[in-house]
Image 1 (cartoon, helix red, strand yellow):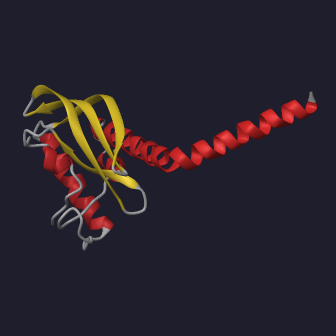
Image 2: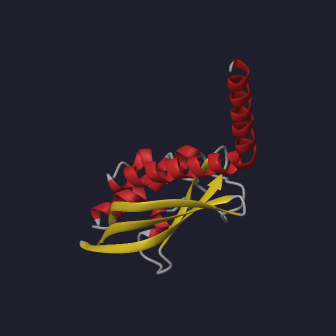
Image 3: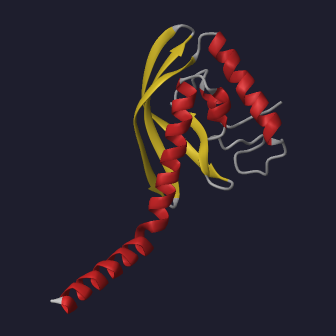
Length: 160
C-alpha cells in the first residue's frame, strides 16, 4: 500500500511538472496581463490616475520604438490629460466581462466598458485591449474601433 501511494504521488508530481512546462509560460503571461488590465480598469474607473498609470505601457514614438521620455514626465503628461478629460465630462465609469487570451504568444483582451462622454453615458462591448512588455506585460491601448475621444488619452502614448 505504501508503494502504491508513492507511485501515485510520483505520477501526480510528474503530471504537474509536464503540465507546467507545456502550458506554464502562456498561463503566466495571461495571468499577468489579466491582473494588469483589471488593476488599470479599476483605478481608471475610480479616477485614480496615478495608480492607473502604473499598469500602462507608455511610449512616446511608435508603439514598438524605444522610449525617449522619462517615466516621471510620461506619468505627469498622462495623469494631467486624463484629469482634464474627466473635468470635461469624459471618463471610464465602469467595466465588466474582462477576458484575456493568447494570440501568437501575446496577450490580448476584451472588455465591456461604460463610459461617460461629455456627460452622456455610453456602453461599448468588446473593447480591444492591447498589451506590450518592458519588464512585465502592461496595458498599451484600449480600442473600440470607433475612434472615440477617450481612447488616445487612456492609451500609453504620451507626447509632451
